[in-house]
Length: 276
Image (tube, rainbow, N blue to C red; front, top):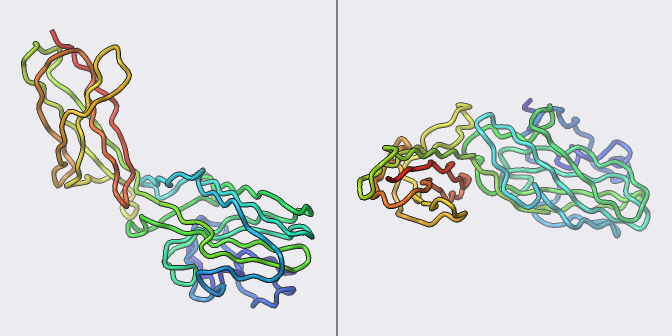
């Protein structure tokens, strides 16, 4: 559901809090996964504060990059700690892609934390990929660095808006395959290892070849647990991979990709080779 939000604060602040803070009334946040955040909102990329309400310990996706597959949907958890000597009336935020919450091209609204009449409370927000309120993206250009605008409102009407409260990565999920042949193979003969590197296309909702990327061929000797680098190659324009090695001992070959600024890291499942 695409709904323009005229004020970022209004997406998350309840009617009673709006009245107390004298913020403009705006339309409600959509129930769907994503909502472009409109041009109006809190004061900008800094804290907007009244009183002694605090926001701390903001964690998005357990501190890891958010990997989004070709469906454009992902499950994400967010935590933040809100504190106020008079208790917490509400807290929440918006995950967005852009310069700040007033200048962005896409945003995902967190559910409300609700009222908790204790001085310090840790809010936990869950966006599940299988539900209407999930983390969602719409365009491939939205991969990269994202930010979180956060708010907390005290039971006494104090408040704090933070922008950004956190920065994090949203990456296009990648897939990698590897196949070593022939099998079995005589010692000293040539082994050909082929595979493909793909990444999620959020606009076409499919996985597509990821070309001109540096990929490393690795080998794990049978009976050991660690892979070692063998050689580096680049994927073709269609994401295909192909290289050769000399058969020496039984083990497993795989390709591994370190990722990029917009695509996630991935390693293929090792493919066994029987050297005789």
